[in-house]
Image 1: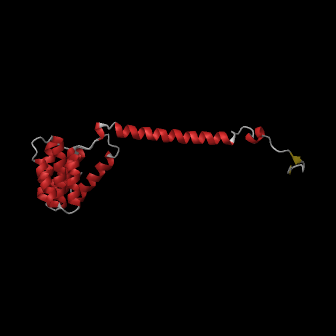
Image 2: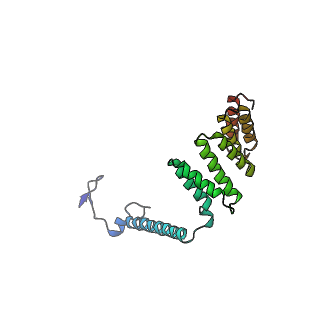
Length: 193
C-alpha cells in the first residue's frame, strides 16, 4: 500500500470506478481517446467525400477555356525563349474566324506584352490600342501609357495615364493607391495630374 503524502497513512488501491474519474468533473481517459478517434474518422470521411465530389462532378466554371490554355502555352514559349514560335501561335490563334471578342482581347494582350518584352514598342503600342478599342479598361490605358513612355512620347503617356485614372473602379479597395501611382507617374513625366 502507498502512503498518503499529507498524513502518512496508507492509501487503499483505487477501484475501477475511482480510476476512471480520478479528478471530479473530468472525462474518463478512455472516453477522450474514443472521442478523438471518432473526430479523426469523421474528418477523414468528410475529406474523402469532398474529394470524391470534386473529381466526379466538375464545375464547368472552373474549367480553363481553350483560349486561356493557348495564352498560357504561348507565354511559356516566350518565357523559354522561343518567341518566334510564340508569335506564330498568336497569329494562328488570332486568325481563327470563330474567335470571340473576349478571347481576342486576351490574345492581343499577350501579343502586346510579347512585343513590349522584345522592345518592339511600336508594334506593342499598335496592339494595345487594338485591345483598348475592343475593351477599354484601366489596364489597357496603362499599357498604352507605358509603351508611349518607352517610345519617348511623354505627352501621349501622360494622356494615357490620365485616361487610366478615369477608368479606375471606384469599388476597388486600392483605388486611391492606384490613382496616386498614376499621378506620380504623370508628375515624373513633367505633367500635371
